[in-house]
Image 1 (tube, rainbow, N blue to C red):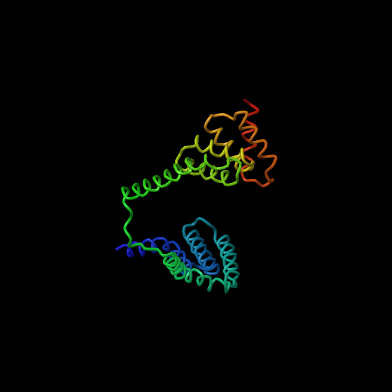
Image 2: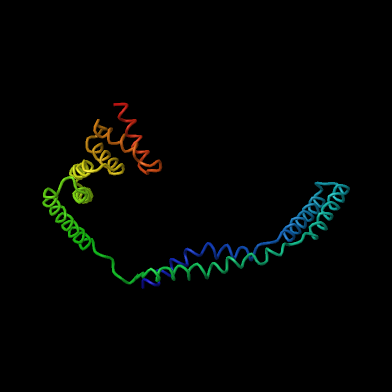
Length: 239
């Protein structure tokens, strides 16, 4: 059933392309259109003469001009490219769905698998949160026992801050990141810490502004957070 739905959606998506292809095949060329227009004009001036709306002399002059245009229209050459212009569209009608199906199955797509129920997804998320909370608890116990000036402690505090941030504990994350900065300064980490402090306090404090300033001074020119740091310092100057 699901495969039938996929086929139906593909047909709907390709319908405009097929319609354009059909329209192109049925379209008129420039010469045919010009001949039809001039023929209609001839019929119109004949009706005008019969109804007495134009004089015979005017009718003869107009008819001569239209006949001249008919001869010119007959000499219009239809471009050869127009005849073969339908080939790319026809090829696309076949290649696009085949390519889409190939990519789908190459990426191990399984349309027949049932969707995960909301309760199951919530249970998986809760289990993941428990694992993260267990990791945070172990880090909190272990980190105070380490040399607080060591690289191992610095990496531990960064990991703790990231885990706390993932659990939504931004205040605890900011504290952990700040401890890592006290061991060794890092411009990117300083900008992250200052931004966390700013979001928590609702303003750019003097400590956060100092972190932003030092981070900008020591960071490369292409640091992705540079614009945010400069904006925060501009906000601090207006306070």
